[in-house]
Image (cartoon, rainbow, N blue to C red):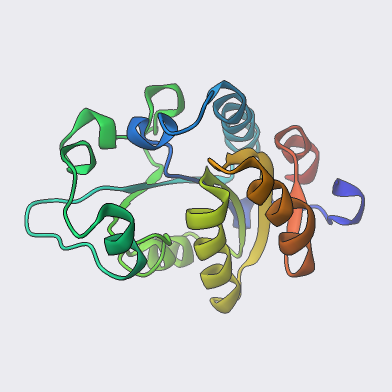
Length: 193
């Protein structure tokens, strides 16, 4: 997949690991492949000195789900999505490290209810590698918003998953390549310079 993808200056790149919480991963039949790919992507990003950012969906007391998130949760926040619940933390296999960006969102996409864009701009990031569950929700919403914010967007295909494998394949194989780049986790080490 990387034949047409140009190398990336790691000083201006960020890998965003999105919605890898236990309550979301538990919706997949088997999360081992997508978690393994995310681990490979994290290893490559960290080794190259790229910024690493974590985005999780969780609600604190008083937060109200809105937009498409309200439809997803039925207007009421389930206990496993409460900001303090262990099930709403980043999965321990992908644990954030000191100095990483970490934001909590209450919408599907990573930008509209967070200061993620401002934090990325402060670090000089202009290229985003996206990894997330699900391909049809957080990855799609975040990719579209990132393009509108003038980021170069690269989706890490095997570090994304969806409850609907056919939809995942359609997005990765047909929709995303029309407007952004798609790579595999094993390609990151060679792309980040």
